Length: 340
Image (cartoon, one colour):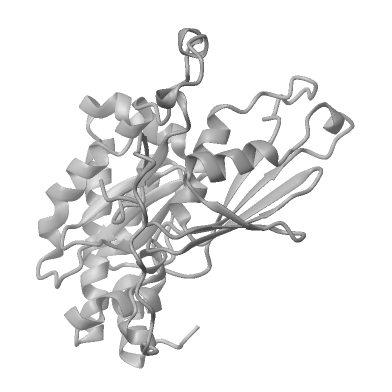
């Protein structure tokens, strides 16, 4: 990891980490109210890279980020302290695991600040606007509104289950596997019907090697095709590696939704553990590996992880094409997912 400029290090010490400074004082108050630790470790070098053009003075950049996080923490504190939000407060407390509320800093794809809850990362995500912020305190009402709607997605079903009536009709054209559309900005998937007679446009050949500085962040770059997916089959574990994070996220959400409970184990865990792995590159919620495994106990033989269902989803739902089965199953998709 590249070292931070001296001015940034000094500003982090004097503004972000200062024990009696405004931010740490606000965070301490939030921790006392929650009864849980608030944990946040900014990826400073990635944030600076993403917002470099807007903050020539890197010391001021740290001051702005500190102010934005303080505005977010104040918003959360006031919401939790308001008895009118009792039901919402219970949801926040239910989401906290291992006695720690986690907070992640990202950069928005637009000039708007935002806040959301991530089930995969088990924490709140604060998205800084992709522009220069003059008064971080002005983001207070924005964060407040976004915090109140953080858990609304919990009420929405991601994928509808096919009913008995649909199953009895037979497999006509309307009953075939649907395709998937993705929002290139948010990476959120949606299953839709897509005509099968559309051909992919020709992809231009790369003639010149670009500079690293000219390329977008990995969480934006890899939303472009071609998408590559590798399947590593096994008896007790299957690994799926993919360059397209939303594809993995959809697979994980679907499999978790329909996974049985292992009642042969007294702790009643899921029959298959579904684990999304955060990528080491980029700034944001980027996944590059999905691991499906069975718990190693004497009841392991009751459930196994098999590949045909995964292959059917990769090809039939996500539209990837099989390239090779030499040890590792390799898939590729050249057509870009549509923007919703």
